[in-house]
Length: 205
Image (cartoon, rainbow, N blue to C red; front, side, top):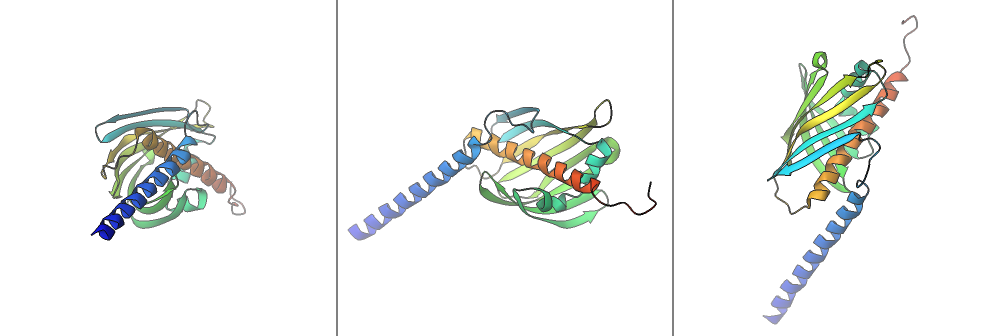
């Protein structure tokens, strides 16, 4: 009986130590996103019960139409983002795409799929979670041109609902949202550069 008891105590000790180490890893990763972030012009992150309201903005040095084209292929995210390990187009129908992702957020792998709806005439892209065991996302990206038409103001607004009810501190949740948004902006910029570097056919204007 004592051996069994000590075995249970040892397992609990290992479990607590593991959770402590995971929390430490999350804190170290989150520290990178505390304070001002160059890619974020403004942010508003407010949580009520299990739902976070999000508003994040960034500036991209490219015209709206080009930025929208770069955004129209989220299935290529793995080519342009350091945190996206895998991105695959699952379905494309009309102006909608469903894309499967595997990302590393705050050092932890996350696997999920999103549905994107492209509304270029409104300069908007909406998204919603199709499959994610941890979070339900609903939001939209809005693309606004600068007065001279050479730059784009990117605004993301939406909500993130915690489905798993894990005891993750609010500061870590905010850091994860910042990291994801910044990764999107950085991938957009790289996609825009790649788009500009595609050789045009001979005779094209």
